[in-house]
Image 1 (cartoon, rainbow, N blue to C red):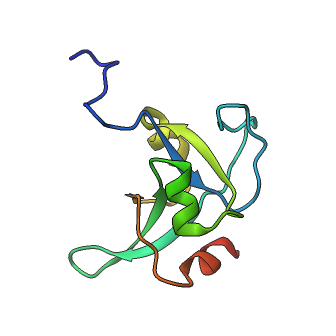
Image 2: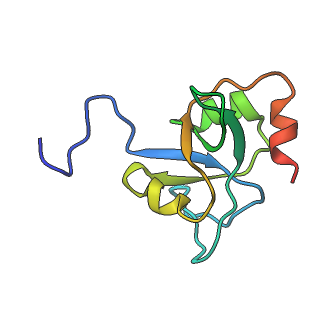
Image 3: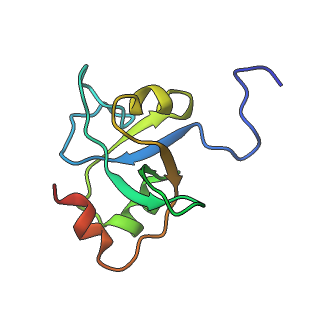
Length: 110
């Protein structure tokens, strides 16, 4: 496998919920050369210490199912997620999380 190959079934892009609407190209990639505020939530690690985690979904339908159809989002190539989140405060990424009832309202305000 070369460095440009992906594991069988692994997504090539992730859908990240954002705080506000972001202008997007036809592929869902942001059209801005600046800061995009992604949704971060506090989670407890194995030791009970709280860390900030970015939410990410493997498909738009999974994001809509978890966060609602009005949740703004952007698409980021998997190999650029670390760069995209640098400076955000995210210490982890939760992929395809199942949010508790009412969580989608809490995470989009702010």
